[in-house]
Image (cartoon, rainbow, N blue to C red; front, side, top):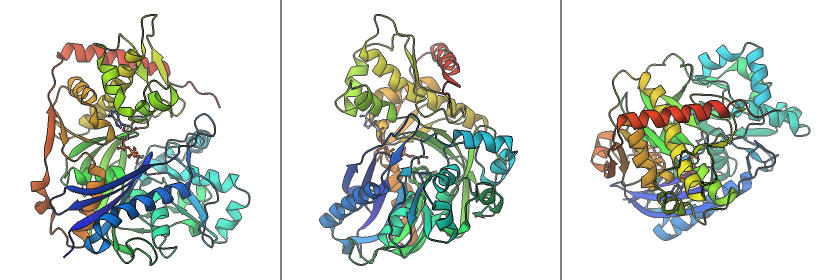
Length: 495
Ligand SMILES: Nc1ncnc2c1ncn2[C@@H]1O[C@H](COP(=O)(O)OP(=O)(O)O)[C@@H](O)[C@H]1O
Ligand SMILES: O=P(O)(O)OC[C@H](O)CO
C-alpha cells in the first residue's frame, strides 16, 4: 500500500515538490527558485522552460528519496493566471510566460470597458476586468508574436495556465487540460455554465483551437509519461494555488475563510454550491469541483504581499535573506510614521487600479532602513485588512478568527500586526505549506488514499494563535493613515 501523496506546487517565485503522509505531515520536500524577468516597468515574465525544469528537478529529488512505488497520486497546484503559449508540434513556448502581476494589457482593459464589455466579464466570469487575468495576456501574445494568431487559428498553438503547461510536459504532450479553478481565472470562462465563453473569446479574438479541455479539480485526468520520474503515477488533482490553500485549510463549508501570504496575498471565503451574484469589489471564482459537486468562493487579491520583502532583499538590497526582515523591523519600535504602499503592480482588491504605483510616505531625516522594513511588513497586513473588511461585509455571519498560511507567515511580527489591525485572533497552522497540502488532499481523496474530508479533520493542527493586543482606537488611527497613503498612490503610471 502506498504511503504518500506528492504535491507539485508551482509558485510565482519557486517550484516545490512535497510528500505528505496519511496524517498530513510533510515527509520530504525540495524547492528551487527560478528567475523573475522584468523586461520593462510593469512587465513581469517567466521562462516556461525554467518553470518546467525547476518543477521536474524538485520532483526528481523527492521521488529519488521516497521511491515512486510509495506514492499513491500526484496533485498539481500552481500560480494562477500566468499565461503560456506554445507550439503543439515541438512543445516549445513561442514567448516567455506573461505573469499574473504583469500590467502590459492595462489599455486593453480600458478599451474593453469603453466597448461596454464590463458587465459581460462580471456576470459570466465573476471577475473584475483587469490585466491580472489570462484573457488579455493571451490576446497580447497573439497580437505581438509574429504570425501567432494565424498559427493559433490553424490549431498549431496551445495556450495554458501553469497547470496546463506542467501536465503537457508531464504527459509529453498527450494531455492538454486545465481544471475549473484555473479556468475561472482566465476571464474567458463562464463559471455558471462551466465552459469557455464564446462572446469573450470572440471579443478578444482568441481561436478556440488554442484552448485546453476543462476538467474537474479532483479526479484522475492523466498519468506521468514513461521516461520521466514517477512514470505511470496518476495525476489526480489540478488546482489554482489559492483554491488549494482554501481546501488545505479545511474550509470545506460555506463561510470558511483563509488568507495566504505568498508573493501576493489572497483571501478566499467558501460561498457554497450556488452560483453567487457578482460582487463590485471582490472576485467570484470556482473554488473546486470534485465528486460531481462544485463550490464557489469570494476572493480578494493583493498583487504584492511577501514580494515586498523580496524587493527589500533584491531591489533595495537592505536584506541578505528574507528572514532578515524580522530582526531589522524589530530593531525599531514602530515604523516612525512611515507608510509603505507597495503598489508595484497596481492595486488589486478592493481598489482595482492598474495605474497605482508604489510609494513610501512620511520619510524624514531620521528614517532608517529599519523603519522602511517595518513599514513594508505592515503594508502586507494593511492590505489584507482592506480585503478582510470587504469580505466580512459580504459574509452572512461575523468572522471571528482568520486562518493564515504561506511563506510570509513565518514572520510573527506580520501576524501580530495583522491580529492587531483586525482585532481578531490569527491562526497559523503547523503546516504553512497549506497550498501543497490542499493539492495533496484533493489528489488523495480522488484515488481513495483518504476516504472522506471528515477523515482529514483530525489533521488540523495550530502552531500559534496571535491574539490582538493593540487598543482599538490605535488600530483605527493606523488604518486611516494607511487609507490616506493609498489614496495618494492611485492613478500614478502613465502609458
Ligand atoms: N521569514 C520571512 N519573513 C517574511 N517574508 C518571508 C519570509 N520568508 C519568505 N517570505 C516571503 O514569502 C514569499 C514566498 O512565499 P511562498 O508561499 O513560497 O510564495 P509563492 O508560492 O508565491 O512563491 C516571498 O515573497 C518571501 O519574500
Ligand atoms: O505564487 P503565489 O502563491 O503568490 O500565488 C499567485 C496567485 O495564484 C496569483 O493569482
